[in-house]
Image (cartoon, rainbow, N blue to C red; front, side, top):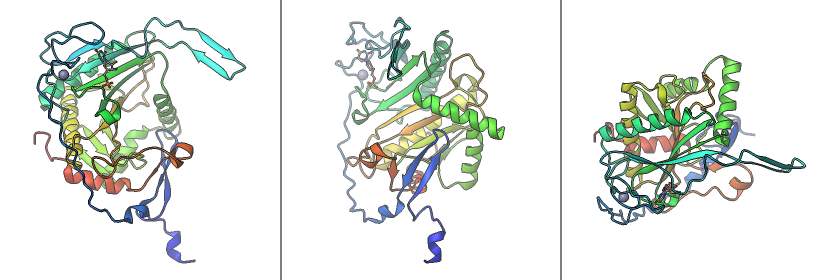
Length: 351
Ligand code: H2U
Ligand code: ZN
């Protein structure tokens, strides 16, 4: 056998990468990207939205589907979801049969946060000053919902684009706060605690250091935050946003860090929009300290961006076939994806 077979080249050979946050593996097949690109950068028409849409249930002054009417808000606006997935008064009862049919009532609070009164803006198009107000609202909501005695998890997330399930282009996010720690948070919780226990250090502080010294997966960076395509990314242009300081949650962000968070969110989303010259769809959300009253020193505040687009505005990735039955797989390497994102990320948030 040829010697080179024994030198694993992560840009050439099929390999698995380990996600230390979830304990799962992703299969990377870089050789498949050698298939020629036929330059099919199809551009889907940029939908022009009006500044105010009389039919939008999130625009100021408009009636919502649930019967309530929005105030004439001029900045951000938070309301209780009219069609909540979770409710605060669900009975806390368990049903169980032979350990196989197990169910339990789950209490929760669901809210919607409008980022701006302007129907036509996106995070990428909002000013850093206005995004800073959104950061402040997220922090306030995290604090307020965490203080509810029975709440253990506050999940803030944004679905952007119809293909990611957003029901409305008006810039907004959702918050689902609930009684039990959900799957993803639970997995990360276990990994962060185990790493802290074994190494006496924070998993994500150590990971951030490795990424800073490697540089190859960095996409954007400011004084307070680092954005990388994680080594174990599943989605083609998935990114992980990490606070540089060891913060367990948003309520520990100082004034400067709040501004820097607003700035880097704008920078990253502007880059995404430039990649295929379309408003880039994604699901993003923050992961932070569970709200169960424990201090959780092992937690490290971060955000995940999961965009589905692969090669153009219309070619997206689906987690199907082998990925559903076995393990997620990607062709373009995280290093390659990061290099492409770096080319389109504006150097300053104010561009
Ligand atoms: P998405 O775009 O991510 O689906 O978020 C919009 C949320 O807004 C959705 O959860 C809620 C939906 O239940 N909603 C209201 O609370 N009131 C309305 O009048 C329409 C939509
Ligand atoms: Zn609107």
